[in-house]
Every structure is written in C-alpha cells, then in structure tokens.
Image 1: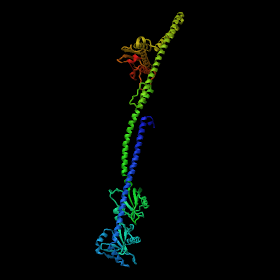
Image 2: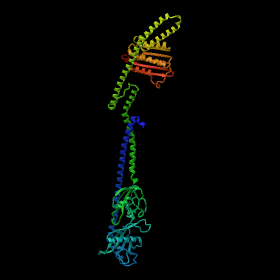
Image 3: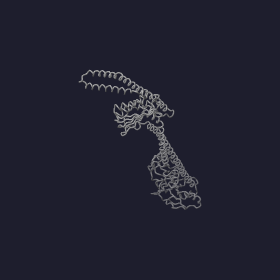
Image 4: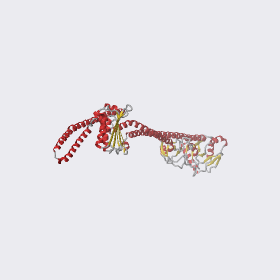
Amino acid sequence: MNFFNRSIVRKLMLLFFIVGITSLSLIGVYSYYKAKRAILQRTLDQLTSIRVMKKSQVEFFFSERMKSLDLISRSGAIREALDRLNSFNYPPFPKTIPLDKSNAPMDTLIFSFGSLYSISGAVEGGKACYELTDSCWVLSENILVDKQLEKLSQIVGKNHREGITDLSSRFPGDTLPVCYIGAPVTGAHGEELGMLALEVSVREIDNIMLEKSSENGLGESGEAYLVGEDLLMRSNSRFIPNSVLLIPVNTTSVKNAFSNQTGSAIIDDYRTIPCLSSYSKLDVPGLNWVILAEIDYQEAMIPIISIRNDLLLIALIVSVFIFSMAQIISWTITQPITRLKSAALQIGQGKFDVEVDIRGDDEISLLSRTFNDMTSQLEQERNSRMTALYDGQELERQRISRELHDGLGQLLVALKIRFENYIAQCSQDDVAAISELRSEFTRTLEEVRRVSYDLAPAGIREFGLDGSLRLFCKEIREGVGIDIDFASFGKFEGISLKARNYLFRITQEAVTNAIRHGKAERIEINLSDGAENYILMIGDNGCGFDPSGIKTGTGLYNIRERTRLLGGTFTIESSRESGTTLRIKIPKIMLSET
C-alpha cells in the first residue's frame, strides 16, 4: 500500500485504469452475453425451422401414402382379388392367387410403393393375408407381420377408414422395422370385402429425417429424429446406427412434446451431451410420435467462443491504450502538483528563491501563480528579517565596541597609569611581582582592543573594503601566527557601507572556519573587480571536507545568507588533499543599491 500512498500519480493512474477497465469489462461482458443470447436464439430458431420442415415432410409423406392407398383400394383389381379371397370360406387357403394381367397399369402404380397386402373379410376359418408380388398374390406366413396386419385390420374395421400401426420388427434382429397403413376395400354395393395394407419401411422415414451432410443446416453434430410413446426412437440416429426401437430417449424435450408443448430448450440429449433442442408433437392420425431437431451445445458455441476471443483481444489492446492514456493524463494533471510539491519542499529547506513554472490558465496554474506570489512575499519578508537581524547585530557590535573602547578601555588605561605611578613608590623587593602584574594589565588591554576591533572593524568607512581586509589579514598574521595573504584587483569605492560590512563578515567567518576547523597553515584572500560582478575568493590548505556530506553550520549559514541578501552566489570547493576554496560572486548593481 505504501507504493500508492506516496504518489498521487500512481493513485490517479490506478483510478483511471480501474474506471477504464471496469467500463470496458462491463461493455465486454454485456456484449458477450448479448451476442451469446442472440446466437443461441438464432440457432434455436434455425432448429425450429428444420423441425417444422421435417414435421411437414413426415406428415405429408404419411398423408400421401394414405391417399394413394385409398385410391388403390378402389381399383377393380383389388376388389377382384378380395372377391376371390373371400370365395375360400375355410382353410386351407391357396398359397398363390394369379394376377389379372388386364390391370397392368394399376400394377405399375401399386409397385411404386412398398409391399402391399390384402386381407380378406371375416370368414368362419379366420382371415387370410396375402402379399402382392409381380405375378401373383402370395399367402403370408410371417407370424409377426400377420399379427401387425391383424391389429391394423381391427383398427380399420372399427373406424371404417384408413388406419396405421406403429413401427415393429418383422423378425428377431430386424434392423429395418416397418409400419403398416391400411384402407378398407368395399364392393360395388358398399359391402366390406376386406382391407388393403401398405408396408412403410423405416428407410423411407430416414430418407426424410436422417441428414449426414454438414451443409443441411444441422452442422457436424445436429440431427432430427422421431420418438414414439414408448420413448424409443422411430428414426435412426445420426450417431448410432440401427437405433430404431432400441435407443431410449427420455429427455426433457421429449416429455414436453408428449405433453403437447411446442418449443425449444437447452438440454442433455439421449447421449447425455448438452445440446440445443427444438421439439413438437407429430400430427399423423394413429401415430403418437414426437419430432425433435437438435445440435450439440459445443458446436453452437463455436461462433460465440470466436466472439469471446475477439473481445478478449480487443480488451487487451484497449487496456494497453487505457493504461497509456491514464499514464499521460495522470502525468499531465499531476506534473504541476509535483512541481508545487518540489517547490514547497525547497521552501521548507529555506530556499525561498524557487519559482514554479506556470503553464495554462486552469485552477492549478492559478494555484501556482498564487504560490509564486506567496514565495516572493516570503522571500522579501525573509530578506527583510535577515537584513534587520544582521544590521541589528552590526549596530549592537558597534555599540559594544564603543562601550569597550570608550568605557572599559579608558578605565583600563587609567588604571594602568595609576598602577605605573604606584610602581614608582614601591620598594625594590616588589619589582618582580609588580612587573608580572604590569604584563597582565597590558595583555588585558590588548584583548579588549582586539575584541572591540572584531566587533566593529576599524577603517571600513575610512579605508574601504580592501583596506579593511588587508588590515584584518595583518591582525590575523600577527595575532595567530599563520601565513595569510590578501590581494585586491580593481576599484571598490562604489560598494555601499552595508555591503562592505557584509563582505567583511563573510571573510571573517571564512577565515575563522579555516583556522578553527580546517587547521589551515596558509590562507589566501583575493578580491577582484570584474565587468559585472565583484568576486571574493578565500582559499586555504587545511584538511578540507566533503561539501555534500557535511551539515551547514552557523558559519557557512551566515556566509550563505549574507551572500544571498547581497543578491550573489556562493560556492564551495573542498577536498581532503587540496583544502577549501570559497567563491562569492556579487553583482555590482546589487552592491551599489544595497
């Protein structure tokens, strides 16, 4: 958390990035689910269209077969055949009955369908079932077929119209179950002669329902199929061969369809695979079947996954763009604030000459302008205070110097004179002690004079700055005993009295530091008159120090402040090997006006 607590730039970047990414995420999620819903709905609508089309085809197929069978049942050949069948009242029935070749055109119509059966009317020995071949009627001996035809005969006889049976196997292991459509056959006077039955193979149903091409609208995993009331398939599965009457389909769609509901849903199919399913009941009289069109959910999701991947790629690109823009905007907003912060820190360190760069006319620019005005006022106030402080110190020093010179100094001189007079009256035995006491008086007087000079250097007003510095160097050389030289180049009459005092105090502080802290044995002071500046250089051969690693003491602080009040610059060059050099550069215009 400290990473963000310390920088408003990072906070703004994070804020902009979160807002941008949140908006992008909301739009992306909304777009994804909207597209997903639309594509799934489109797929369900497509399945519904296929299911409606297949339903119409199946219903039309059975309707046409019933109509064609009704037409055939009215033909003279069928009536004649059943008349001959009914002439056999008792078994055994003949195994074949020849066809009447005069009905060849009708035979062509009959043979365009599947197997055709005729069932005689009620006789005392039972009903006879014959299958039509290309040359004759052949007595059927298939018990399973006969059983289904007997069931169909009962349906047709009860309703006196066309009927149909559900799919059933003709023999054990039959892979092509069939159903039978029956129509009543009546005589010329309306009497019932028997029934004509048409066999419909599951292959014909599969020709309508079974699709294996991926270009039929069902893709690679879609299929349409029929389910009977026993929940077994009535058309072959695309994925499981020979599934009719073998594969159970107990899905939600099948249950809804048998409840006379029509619709679509996302379910698990008979393979327990998630899929999109469209369902309805089949409208074929006599058959309780439902029809379904389905496609695997995974295949339906392929375009949605593609959209999702595109959205993720776009989101990644936009995220990079948002991050870049957040960084640029944050930097643009916070850069003036950062400059203000930096300036405030410098002011906290005592650097009141700092000024914030103003760009634009916004609120932050107004704040920066106000900050600069405040800084300028603080600088002026500080300069006034520091000037008053140093000037007050100088006046106080001059007052104390005068007190020492005129008061204590005169008292010491008078005391010394009286002491000299007293010596003349003393005996020879007290000479040694008195001589020592005289030396103490002399040293005390000289110390008072030195302190008075340090407090208020003599000659600054009369001899100028260069003369005062030369006299100061002489006092140091004689008093301390180190090698100190002073050299001046140029004219310095134009320097104001206050500026002379400041420059003298600067030199005094520098020399004191060189002797006390630098342990210098040689000091050089140069005062030069340049074209635009007065330059004061103080160099020594002392032990030196690291300017970047040392804390500014009172001496250096006073030097720096006095230089700043004079409008000049102050630099230090120091090393352990070469000693220390101070360079003070003061503009002439400042010294003449100060």
